[in-house]
Image (cartoon, rainbow, N blue to C red; front, side, top):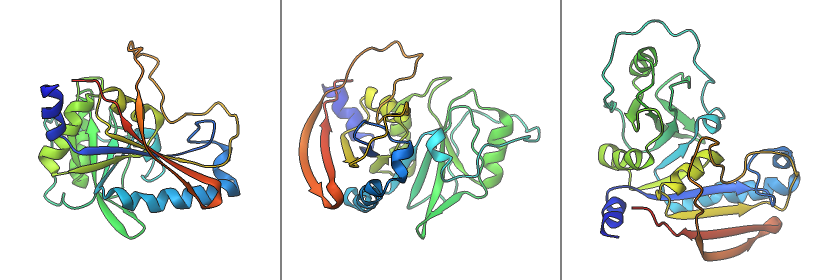
Length: 244
């Protein structure tokens, strides 16, 4: 119990904020339905409620905002597997979990709705020297969290220690949502339910990696339920973390 409290003090408060269909899907044809557009509006407005200055995405979800995948990188000089914090890193942050180093960028910031956010990459030590040199050239900050597999606890502690992030939002995809929840690194789940479903075989709110040997489940405690315009429902849960 004491160890868990110490870790909580040394990492950001983390909320997982997700827009979902009634069947749990977070991608699929339901996203283009008029019923979902109203829910999506609510979802966007609610981001302000949590007062987070950093948003974290998985590799696939980040493709909605970046420049795709890198290709044909030139040979790079060997660089140590140590964290790099850009001198321009301050204020708002967009964080990408990119274990192997594959995401492409045109600069070290992303401009979303007029807000410029500095990019932070979370890498594992299997990343190539070519990719590290690529990030350095763009002056993109990066941290290491794990040798081959993602170390969620280490990532969160470093984000607070090195960037001063006190409140962080995780916004998908499902594999990243589960990885951090399973590691005991999520404090709250904010689930916006759109009045739609498509029954497709798509990624859901939480997805476990097929290689995971952990068969444990996670419990949640309901904080509030709110009915919104457009038949949207907003559920807020406290995560019953039992880790550490």
